[in-house]
Length: 341
Image (cartoon, rainbow, N blue to C red; front, top):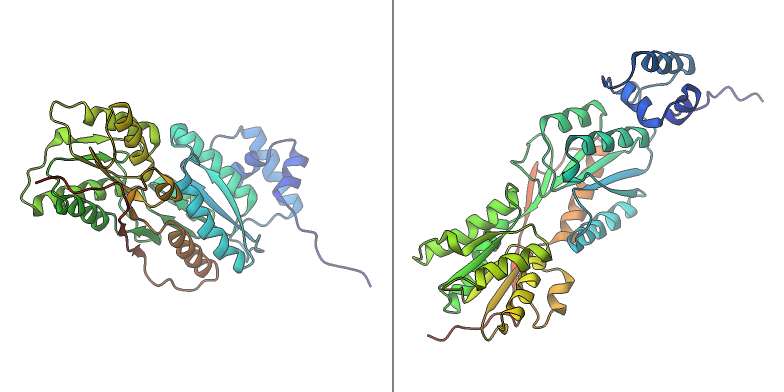
């Protein structure tokens, strides 16, 4: 019996026939202007000759792939997100492709990732701590790609489901815990400026102080970048003040561990001379010496919920809510001690 089924035409085949790269074909398909006219004409001619069907002109064949995209992949924080996403998607028969849009690369890095995404024909994408600006949003819509954002960098877009945590409440709880241990001069190592979660944690710290009748002192707040080195730098700056804090709340565990090293180099003992609280509850928090008191952010669960939400979008099903925040809670350990009255 003769098989009359038409062969599937791939972008790779078009690129090979045109003598160009796969991203170049993707740029033509997406209507991008950064393609030479002669190249564009050659690619478009081959697209017509091969009968290539653009994504969205017919029901696409599922690729079984989902993109999980970070700004950077240099944090154990990312590992917890990946674990939750992978375990959930694996149960639905989907595979995860992990990549990064490096924030230092700017718009060029974003465009490069979009080209690769179009060539890969993923079924959906989960973006982590990403500012879904108008350009990126429009490009993802052009690709007809379902998207969920974990911990959005800016004000959440209600058209795109977002998964976050109760950052403000967690920061209030941490600050109140230190106040309850008789600490009144509390330093704060803030997260990367401009991020939604950074602002929420700073606001929670300020609200905790205000509720206790304490004035906010800008000298006690140093911005970090959520990593160990910025925590060490900020901790050193706080501990060398003329009147240093008796406790420091850092907006991430990695920065809190940087504060540990800053205290050690200043000849201070934790918690005898300085109490410290972090945020995240990464595995390293319980391994530290002494074990770190921290605010548990349910990172793995956030990844799981984002994956489940994306699968619903891929299947054309309604999502439960456009904005979901999972609860944070304080995990008391040995890095906090009451200050003598």
